[in-house]
Length: 297
Image 1 (cartoon, rainbow, N blue to C red):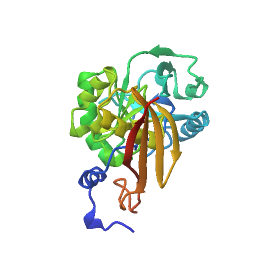
Image 2: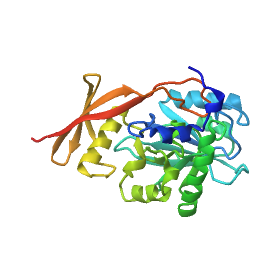
Image 3: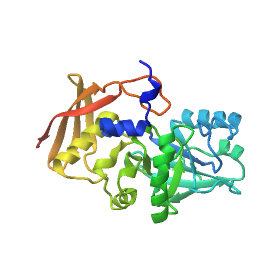
Image 4: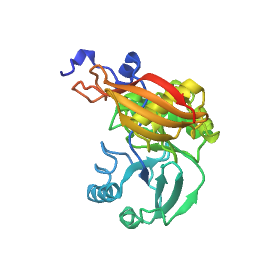
């Protein structure tokens, strides 16, 4: 099915009209390699001009080959190239959360940066990365700009614009590092509240999509557990096991009073246009709660 032109609307507007759920929509990212690219970004920030495409391909192959996710970042409002090329390695795995910063004299030297985090300067500061990738999706530029402006006023050193995160229809989208906490519809509320909650060890459930190091079913199960037990701590309900069951999932989480068992139904959405540029309707996975219980030892 293709789009009829007169029915076009920004993808984030359509998502809000449909009330697309955020639950369990955080894309995968165990470890990340962040590269400061102060100039404008092409459709793909590291593979298209104005970034050097040959260098970009080599970087992406190297980063993804190491099981990491590349991400371009830049300071909001700045377009002049810095005198050095800053980079950061972020580990979002539970129990391994860390950020290491470094810099090189030119972009080509990024190919020689060890990807194991053995060099650079460790940092205890969080990073609030907001997608403002206009050439990838206009909603990210419009809605993301509102989010990054508010965050930069409150947390100027921790706030960065970033390239495509996934889930354009949930714009404004952002990720909180080092934990890899995804948020959507952030411009509908107070994005500074998300930063304040993180520094207090909590998530903001109504804007939270899930953690990048966890699978979609676990992300969804944690959401329903937090909702049921009123526990919004980041560290709450770590996963024990997950298995496919009856057109859905059975996820076991560690709870305060025993093992929390969450039964999920996985079903495709109604056909939708997932980005502003999309011309074909697709169905996306959604997770509904069947049941939740506690197994006490």
